[in-house]
Length: 253
Image 1 (spheres, rainbow, N blue to C red):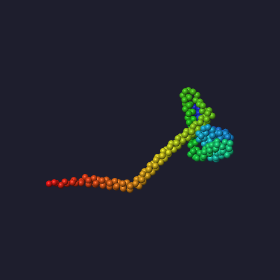
Image 2 (cartoon, one colour):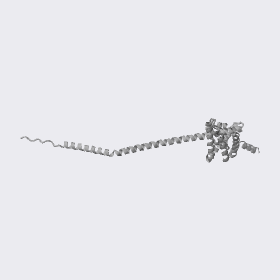
Image 3 (cartoon, rainbow, N blue to C red):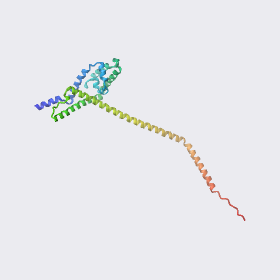
Image 4 (tube, helix red, strand yellow):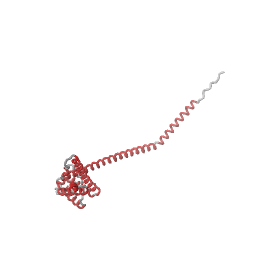
């Protein structure tokens, strides 16, 4: 019974799979509910703070909404935030308000698209699994060293913060890879275009050369005929001069 009880406690302490993810989402929802009361100025600050270009890659983070929220809840949250940060409502800081509004609009559109929403959820799940895996590895090492198997992520707040950081890291890594891929594709398109331009210019030169060649054909033929005629005339004249019989001297008696 003691062993069974210990296993149950360990499972409760370190839940896994879907149940663990649901617990995590509930905790995130509580945090987001607390943050949702931010004023327009605070929301603009949140969405335009240093590093926001990477932090805002997580659409759920931008909208402060539960990944399991319904489409109606998503729509309602978008309306609330878009009104709060809209440039027309924040004319004292229109540039940052516009940037914040664009971040909200982009996140909303991402979550309306099924595949993009699923990818975002997968990233959050992967971040949590990474932290849980790291915790297990730390416990194994502590157990091997004969030390208490308590790790800092056992603290609820530390665990949430670790998952949050890992989530941002994964989103950032995906964005960097996307940009690198786009750069490679752009370079390849540029190279192909340069080759196409070079081939077009070569074809144009060849066509121009062929045209000039055709147009000058008659002149070349006449020149060749004149050359051959002159050559033949000189040859015949030379031959006649060479075959001229010698003068016959008359004998004197």
